[in-house]
Length: 609
Ligand SMILES: Nc1nc2c(ncn2[C@@H]2O[C@H](COP(=O)(O)OP(=O)(O)OP(=O)(O)O)[C@@H](O)[C@H]2O)c(=O)[nH]1
Ligand SMILES: O=C([O-])CC(=O)C(=O)O
Ligand SMILES: [Mn+2]
Image (cartoon, rainbow, N blue to C red; front, side):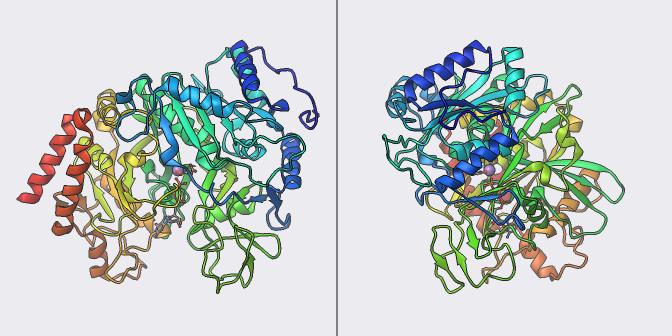
């Protein structure tokens, strides 16, 4: 099939889906592109697009010997992360966006956006990308169509989701509903104007209309701002669908554990951005006899099944993982997936032999690199070679340890849920909640230090309920209520057990209190043994923490005092924490579920006794 967009005219729509054709026409009339191109998702098409991106200087082709069919992109230095300040939930009523979201009246916002999008694709190609999140043969497939003027977005979406001809055919056959997701770099080209390698706009707007279930994203080409199937659809819009349809859309990984007794367990875990989901999802166990397989590393959709069991799927098809800290020592499974090629790296450093490098990738630091901003770099440089939010975008089926169940539209039954954050103090390595509602309380009060995954200050502790603070598409109190009411559909015996983890606690000398990464398999083993009722724990006011003897520490060079420092519940630290939780809860006003207020009261009482 020839790739018709290069210099061609508008191609006829390859679908009879009247609603879709009308929307594409309406958008084209507004954004006034030079041409409209319907993306088919083929390899030949992707080759033509990446060739073009290489010619335009957006992509650098990497050394095919070491990184086959792989590319590096370098963004505008002002377009390196999600922009939470510019992310909006424009529900009809402000109340429905809640205090955790930015809000503007939807008709006012539409007017503003129409102004920005008018003519915004002049001189460019408008790509139409039909995609599906989750399985195409699911009972009710979740379709979307992203319109974008960025070929980098097309090529990245091809990795992150199922896109193209087959999806469009199914959408057409079902005359299916879909989420219209409109994206523009906001960088029209005048006649004869030469393009820059990373076009974008200094003004950025990431906007969701929850009642309409539509997305408008303007001005950024980066990650969660621009690959609209990911955070915008699969979390913000999907959380609204989930509220209305009785399921959950969560910022979670899914992993499968097989014990030495050959029993299998599925665990999901919610950690904020850049707090360890991809690493835990690709866990390389350091203890004997345990096997780990991956189902997902960032987004999980869950629903209670016919038997009252909680079933989970990963709606994505790729990894958009944090590069720095991902290395042969810490995450060899990710490194093996990346080494197979077919990847797009963004804001990493380049080695002299046409490969990529980032902090933590290898124990040995190269003598010379080109940093993510194109400058010469040596180990003596005072800046990092890769941007701290540099990313690899890699097809998930390149993971050797991908579980077969990834392909099952019915998903897997979750038996434990972990909530975790990045906290230097206060929060123990692992704590089991007292029960389901207490576990929701743990999730609702989750806190973490901010990271480079979002623009703004790094290292400030903030509350991040269920690691969903930037992704809840509606009122946060309603979201917590949804978690509570949904579980009435569950078989209470089969409700997952909920745990709180913290891989990032520090010791007095500033080092990590727990070695993390592969050693987290020891914590996972304790979690499973708690499900089985075979591991000991001590009851504390916040929940059950391991005794030194109940954690498998075989072969680990840690003293009992060091282990104690990792799992300790310090009453003084918790006095400050209770204050923080109190302040957080006061921000919900009337929308905080009474059950959770009761949980806080109970926690305070347990500390007082
Ligand atoms: N010390 C320590 N660092 C970790 C651990 N797990 C992950 N990290 C580091 O945390 C950073 C982010 O980890 P990821 O696993 O990519 O985070 P994520 O939650 O998948 O992030 P998003 O893709 O932004 O949602 C990386 O630099 C990791 O090296 C751990 O167990 N201990
Ligand atoms: O959305 C992104 O840009 C990357 C991501 O997973 C996150 O920030 O949680
Ligand atoms: Mn994420």
